[in-house]
Structures are given as structure tokens and as C-alpha cells.
Image 1: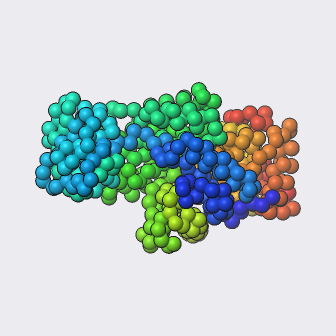
Image 2 (image 1 turned 90 degrees about the vertical axis):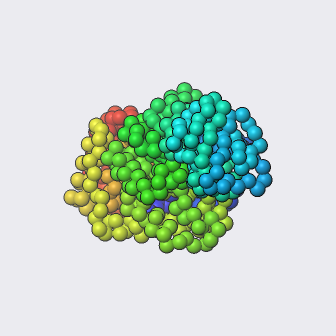
Amino acid sequence: MTGKMNCPKTKIVATVGPASFEVPVLVRLARAGADVFRINFSHGTLEEHRQQLENIRQAGVQIGEPLAIMADLCGPKIRVGKMQEGVSLVEGEEVTIQRDPVVGNAKRFSTTLAELIEEVQPGEQIRLDDGKLRLEATAVRTPDEIVCRIITGGPLSGGKGIHLPQTRLSIAALTEKDFSDARWIAERDFDYVALSFVQGPDSVLELRDFLAKHGSSAKVVAKIEKPNAIRNIGPIIEASDVILVARGDMGVEMDLPEVPLAQKRLAELCRQAGKPCIIATQMLESMTSSPTPTRAEVSDVANAVLDMADAVMLSGETAIGKYPVESVAMMDSIVRRAEQYQEESGRGLTLDLPGGGAAAIAQAVHTVVFAEPVRAVVTFSASGTTAQALSKMRLPVPLLVLTPNRRVLQQACLLYGVQSRPAETPEHTGDVLALAAQTVADLGWAVQGECIIVVSGRPIGRPGSTNTLVVHRL
């Protein structure tokens, strides 16, 4: 058994795609530092996703380590309809967006969301192609069309994204495709499901209920990318298991200077709530085509670590890039150095968590770790709740979760500083101590005469029963 005692504590999420779906590449990505693999349902077929899922699980078997898999639903992405070739919108002129489908030109085009006509109000901005083109609605002729003034012109082709930063959309975050995909996901071995374009807690709860109804214990990740989500962030965090800061669409939906401030605020709110936070999008974007990142990208990843994100994510870099393994290895090295600085400076080592028993035990563990010469912390966890609470303590020693639950084993891969191993449920507390000591010794984390902390509950293996902390000498 090998342990990753010197691995970084901030987890790395790698998106799977044409450049990375084969088992040998997935094995190399995992060995380079990837802990979680993301399958993007905005692209590809269900058969391709099935193959990706099977390949990731096979890679986990080959490396002998658990891996988490996240399914990312595409949500109500609004796009430009079919367009003629060579269309370019001219600044200062007018263009009409109409309800009925049409092959668009420089004067008139349609969208993939007919209801858009009822949603936009005069004076609101419409942004096209990741914000490169900007329109302002001057007249809304419900239910037929919207007349817009072109603020920023440029080439426009079919399929480009449409963003409505000032519009309060009434459309649901879960589309018919999302429900169909979620049902398929619920029947398979996924650990997390990410929901796009969240605007409030209701859609998060709806997805959670849908997954549970269809037999899935996957945790729900809320992607924050719209101003409405920022306004409703408290209830969204409460309803979600994980928050993902999706800076790509966020940078189109709001003014760019606001994005890093939103990132810091969201990371801080997740810390206060005891919920994992993932920072995502364009972190090492230049490595899609270059073997090295820019200095700004290196600083971006390091700052996400200093913001105390639990995980950082790669998208196109690993999905379609020329250097997927190098991208993960580079992110791993940046994370290591930022964490080293963080520990040397003593930043962020105390935290008050909300909640009951698990949070209280986690606070106690934090106190003991800094008062006694402890080599590692081990928790026996049936539900993963204690593991998450301990993760948020940002302990300076290795943290190991022993669990009989395969889902908890895999989901722990996203938790900051946590490593996990499968274990049968012991009959007695003494058996937990013996199992913890033997596992830590096998991992090379502690030797005879050194101390570890062991956290468990009575009765053993019952979710929510964590109530025991023992300082145990090997």
C-alpha cells in the first residue's frame, strides 16, 4: 500500500475529452495529480460518456487509488440560431432577434430559446460569443421580436452563446435534456453532478430529489456563473453540497473586474459554511496549445489556493489540449508551492464551522493537532460528514478516511487534504484503533511510538454518530 503523504492537499479536477479519455492517458493524469475527473454533458453522446466512465474506473484500478467522477449537466445554454456565412454585425446599426427560426443575417437572426423574446426588457444588454459582441434592447415586440442597437460589432456565426447579464430569467435551470441525462447518470457510478446556470436554491433541491428518486447518492455541485446566483448565494450554498466558481460564463455575465472579487467572496462563504469550493475556467488556458503557462496563469492558480479553494479545475487544457498530462503536472507543482507558502506563513489555520457533532469533533481535533506531536488523523466514516468537517480544518498533518461505503470513498477525493481507503466496519472501538494504526503504518505516515488521532462514533458505522476522539500511540 502506498500513501500520498507528500501530495498537495488542494484537489485537482481534470475534464475528460478527446485528448484524455483513453485509459493510459487517464492513468498518467491521475499519477500527475488529478483527483477528480469531469465529464461534460454539453459535448458528446451518452455512449461516449459511458466509455469515459468505464475508462476512468479502470484507470483507478490500475493505480490502486480511488478517483471521483463528476457529471456536468449543460443546463439552459442559449445560442444563436443558424446563420448565413460571413455575417458581421456593424456597430451603431440595428439588428432584430426574432422568435421564429430563420437563417440569420446582419439584420435579423433567431435563437435556440424562443422564450427569450418574453424575458428581455428594453435597455437590457445582450452579449454574444463570450461577450465579444454586445447589443442593447431598444424595443420588445412580444411575442415576435426584439429590436437591438449594436454596441460592439463583429463576426457572428450560428451556435455562438448568448448571455443576458441584466435579465432575470424565469426559465428553469434544468432542461428536458438535463433530466434525461440526470436519469442516465443516476443509474451509473457517478459521485458528483454539477448543475449549470443556477439562479436559486430550488433547482439545486430539485436535482437532488430527482437523483435520490432514481437511486443515486451523488452530491450536487452548484455552478455559480450568473449575477442572480451571487444575489441568492446564501440559500444556494445551503442547498448545495459543493460550489463551483465558473469564471468563464461569470466573466460574460458580469463586468470582468468583478470576477476575482466574486471568486474571493464565494471561497470565503464556502469556508464559513463548511462546503467545498472549486475554482474553474481558463486556469492554464494557454497550455491548451503551449507546453508552458503564462506567468499570469501561474499566479491565478496560486491565488485560488491562497483563497483557500478546496479544488482547482482544468477544462479544455485536459479535454482537447495538446498537453493534458503536462497541464495537470504544472497545476500540481503550482499548488504544492502555494500550499508550502501558506503553511510557512500560518495563513488560514483556524476556522469555526457551523453544525453539530461532527463540527465540534473537528474543532477538537484541530486543537489537539496543534497541542500534541500528532503524525496523522484517521476517521472512520460511514457518510463522509466527519471527513468533510475535518477537511475544512486544514490540518497540517495527513488526514485519512476509512469507510465501508464506496461512494464516500470516491467522493472524498474532492475534499481538501483527505485521502481515503476502503475498510470493513469494525465491531468495537478498539478494532477501529487497531485498524487505523495498521493502515497509517502501512502508508508510512507513522512508526511505533508515534501518536495519531482516531475519530469514530458509537455505534460504529452509523451515520451521524461521530462522538469519539482518541489520541492513540502506535
